[in-house]
Length: 169
Image (cartoon, rainbow, N blue to C red; front, side, top):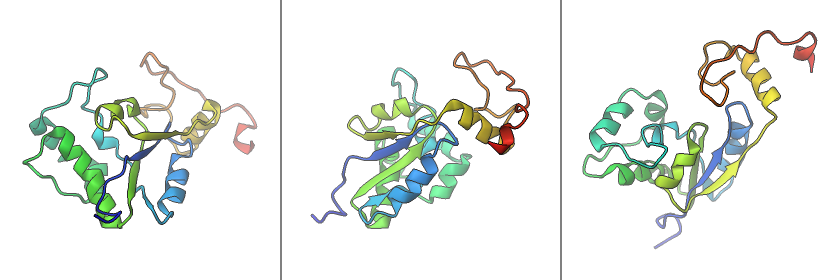
């Protein structure tokens, strides 16, 4: 069995949106042995915080309308269970790349990855929350955007306008 055909524990780049996860993912993906094709946000949203897995039927239905999944261009094997199917997506990308190590970026619910890949490795990017908020606002992601200005309790909060001079910092 050569290195490409032998799966290796995946590596996930995790962190908040606008924290630098994409830049690190792009750098790692240029390594000759590491394939990190993009965001794997579609892997975990239906997994509960306690680790309850969705039915295959419900998950496949969810995938039919998920824009990030469509961009991955991987096939759905209806004979697999949920865990095997999700793992197969990363494996398909790894094999396509010809690299021995695979991974992905995950911004939301990355703590649930442990229910799918118990031995996976994480690179957790942490950026100052003020810089993340400023970056989100500059992208126009303030107000009703699902991730900007939401406190830990889940209620939306208004960040308001940037203070004078903040845009030049």
